[in-house]
Image 1 (cartoon, helix red, strand yellow):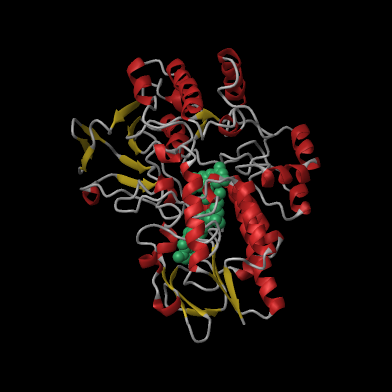
Image 2 (image 1 turned 60 degrees about the horizontal axis):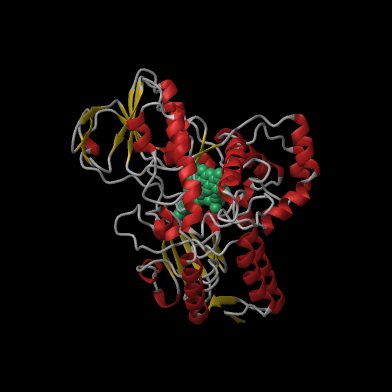
Length: 494
Ligand SMILES: Cc1cc2nc3c(=O)[nH]c(=O)nc-3n(C[C@H](O)[C@H](O)[C@H](O)COP(=O)(O)OP(=O)(O)OC[C@H]3O[C@@H](n4cnc5c(N)ncnc54)[C@H](O)[C@@H]3O)c2cc1C
């Protein structure tokens, strides 16, 4: 139970979306009865919430745990999908809805020698339930994405020594986590309807009031004042609540990026370490923006060191640690905070075969192609929740997920009313969607970074910008228009 929040139990794992909008919106009773402890809950609390939801709505009887789906084949004659699990059990179903997660296929990089390492190693996305004891240990942490940035301060407080191996320096904004006071909790509970409305209408699923101003239309003094004020508030608001062109205009973005670099130089005492931590090779927000609690401050500790593996790459893992081109680092424990084969990884681990035995792996050999991120031409009655080609990971995800769940449920209901048994995206509609998705992505700065949004973290993965970058309002409008026009771009058959 819990998906992401079941697997990611690493120290410091917590949500970067605030609790009052990283939650379901389908039940007022649930909203009113559940008490969040803080702004940004930790993994165990989110897992408890998801377990509570399962119990509250009696969902467990519909879930089979410890069951990996390995194959799914569409039968042209019967119009049914045959779904095969790892132990070989077979299920027949008319509709197949995937909810395998955009960030659930853990990526352990292939580094020579890992098998002979005598210490322990872990990937943050498959963390042992019983936890890991870092006391007295020399720990190496590889990766400075959102996860590495959450884990670093917590591991540093426990370990004898922590060495962080950094390939790409990252922008991070303080989370400013705090307990939810009873007054604040009451205010939130009284305003849930409005909060949810705003999350659905906003670009990225956050309930912030939209900002209309450009970073370039205000004076330098006013710009710094706005950045400073929102830096003090903390969180994703720095990207979505400061100026409206941070992700669209290089000059505007440069002001935000430079502000954050200024903060890093202020916080980190050793100037050499501070410079290494300053990102200069991509604009702020073009990679998934992390938020943190004491990340940069942690580099002021005596037991923490930073190693630049861009200038001196890792060569191998030895029996006793890790060797870069320049030096050897003795380690007891290695933590891979190296992320995921995002968006397509979990789908393509399943051998999915559509019409005429068409393999999804073959179809997506040059990168994922979908219609609205919801369906794939050649794969009738298969729906992909937060599939590539939908806003998914660029949005506060519960909002994106609920939208898809509603759209898919309504579609299946519509089919039942119409007596339709089969729905399939047409190749023309899919081509047009892929083209439109590429166009809107080109209007952003997302191509300026080597990110997992583009699949760059996985060797051999096609370089395609996978999520839909046109923002939620435009996306939702198009999904609705498709329905209003009788499921335009889909072929429905009896
Ligand atoms: C550390 C971390 C922090 C995050 N923080 C945020 C955040 O702050 N805000 C935000 O909006 N999003 C965040 N996300 C994204 C997060 O993944 C989503 O918010 C959300 O949990 C996705 O839910 P899901 O049900 O779609 O997928 P998941 O939660 O990933 O669940 C998918 C489940 O399907 C299972 N599965 C996959 N393949 C198969 C198969 N073949 N057979 C059977 N089961 C399978 C997986 O094991 C997993 O249990 C975070 C992700 C991570 C990893």
